[in-house]
Structure formats: structure tokens, C-alpha cells
Length: 331
Image (cartoon, rainbow, N blue to C red; front, side, top):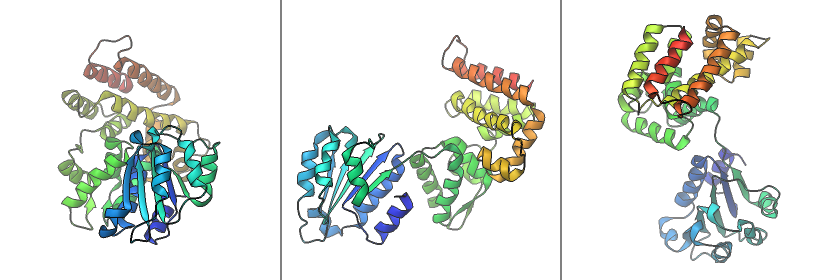
């Protein structure tokens, strides 16, 4: 089931006997688990009918035993198993999964791992229970997720601010949601979030960030690029070189892909590069300033300096490496 469908069913009180939640993205797993923990039982029912177990302390037999109990003065009992990835022989849970109690809602948090699809447990859970894989979102999906998250909270955000947040916070949804919640607390409902608001409330500079560096390089604005690099060098903890190199690598990889596109219709470009149509013009402009050969050279540089930043055949400081890298890109 999709995340949205699971939440919708839970809100409609359509419960399944087992929720096996697994995968690398902990955010969706935590949201589903917290919703069940907070909403299925009343406060008075939770005292006798809600149990939290931890994988490092139990075996599947303990889960089986707890799950087969009947609720006390309630329609359901809720059992939440956290850190289930630490349980040895998790596949033995199949014996309960074959005949689960409808009065028990068993939630398994199996984080950072996948459940083997060849196992009998996987096949059994796929029939009458919820088997949900929580996958990391690709970087290009993060801006849309940020916009959607804020829309649900009755806020809006402009495109530049969205990409600024995505660039700075990465694809850790829990971290992003935490920062967005802070913004929501400090702003009136219905507000539009701008780069200025982000700088004031989160501390991400609207002028000195990887997104603006990318723009400076795209425009071959040497003065602006050097100002940003000098700021980065003066604040290395807030602007690690690995993030800057990664940001530029993804950008120029898309520029290279653009060079090889036969159909350069903006709609097709947006689809193939997986970018917002608003930013297609940036890739078009960059491709005009950096031909195929130069773009390939830049990607080679980025790989080289990524290795150097990790100490490979290099003893230079990160700030010096960054200045040298940007100089070679721009000249």
C-alpha cells in the first residue's frame, strides 16, 4: 500500500492486524507508527492495551505471545515493535502472521533494511496485512515534497526558497519536516515562505549557499562566485566541501544530459532531467556557456576534487581546494 492510502484507511478506522513497515526512509515509518499509537486507543484504553517492545530485547516468540492476548475493556490492543531489525530470525513471525488476531494491531518497525521477498513471511504479510516499504525520495523529488508538506499545513513557498531548503537540508525528510514545523510555528497561517524568511528563521543564507554558487557559475559571474567561496571558506562547518561538490556534480550532470538531448522542447527537457519546468531555462543558458567538452571537463574536475577532499594524494585545506576548483571551472 502507498503511504497516503495507509493514513487514509487509519483515519477511517479501517485497521489491519499487522503493519510491517520497513526500509531506509524512517520518516514515513515513524508517521504511520505515531498515528496508530496516538489515535487507535483512547487515553484510558492505552494503559492496559498499548505495549511497546524493542527488537534488541525480544524474540519473535515474545511478539507472538503478546499479540495473542485479548484486549481489556477495549475493541483493540496495540503492540508496537521498535528496532525490529535487531530481532534474530524475524522470519519466524510467519507463524503469527498466518493467523493473526483481528483484535490486535501489531506494528513492526523494521528500519534501514529490506524484507526478503522470497521468504514465506513476505508472501504471507502481503495477503491480509499492510506491508509497506519506506523508500528514500530521490533528490529531485524533495522540492515537490516540501511544497506539498507546507500546503497541507496551509502555507505556500516560492520556488527559489524550495530549492534553497532542498539544497541545504538534503533528502532527510525528518530533518526537513522538523525545520518546516519550526517555520510554521513562527509564521501566521497562510504565509508565503521566501528566502528572506528562511534566512531569518533557519539560518540558511539567501546569498551565500550552493544554489547561489551554482547560479554564479552558470552565469560565469566570477566576482559573485568568489564572494560565495570566500564565505564558505570562512564558515567551513556550515558549508562542507563535500556538499558543494555534490551539488555541482548533480547540476553539471544534468547539463551534460541536456547537451545530448535530441528533443530540447522545454516540456521534454523537464521530464528527462526530472526538474521543475521553471528551471529548464537555467540548463539551456548553462549549456550555451559550457559546451559538451567543457561540461565533461568540469565533471572530471568534480570527481578529482571529491577524491582530494577525502585525502587522496592531497594535503591541502578544503578552502584552498574549493577556490582552486572554482577557478578551474570558471576559466
